[in-house]
Length: 286
Image (cartoon, rainbow, N blue to C red):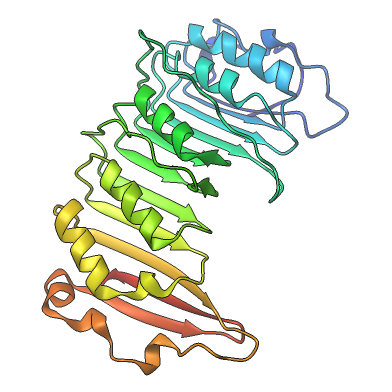
């Protein structure tokens, strides 16, 4: 159901899902009362392009919803309310899934800047998708509020130039997906060493000309040390061809991903070449 009006003339207690948007300029009058405690069976809510002050008011009201399991936030303009939004979201009593998207320019420098109080709310979130810029301290702080995470996806630049902080244990985390355009393998290795979790599935997407990601021996060492329970491994590495074609393509070298380590796990390496890029993929055979 798409809702654009501030007053809802429906049987609110029967509504299970709502998509609330301010994209349409004909419906700009939306207030916090658009969603209130009368929506007793609301399970899924999508907030798209909501003005920051209205978004904060709406999130404040969601704490009264006893069955809100899924929340998607899409912000398409400049947005600086990440800290306030997360603080309100972590108080939601039944939330299981959160996707938070913020459209930002490549040069923006927003941060969550969450603090860690002595007594903090423990979020019920189990599946979290972070689709906005954050630094490693922000990621660590978010994790401190979400100890029940079983799936975590980070789909944006993770600013990792500073030293990685201590990341809190995630005993329930089994599925991790990282889309990190500019993280070196060394930085990625430090991040994995800090995440105290028993991962079963790892997905990694890299847009970075760092061929260490194609070093099978480094991967073997990392997996055997930190990811001993890994069952499924997915890697997409984009190797951009230089103007003068100075770099040797991996396919021209011996395939190091054909040792007993990779054969036993049935993880295979594939390469797909276009005019400007070669995409290397590691995936389970089945």
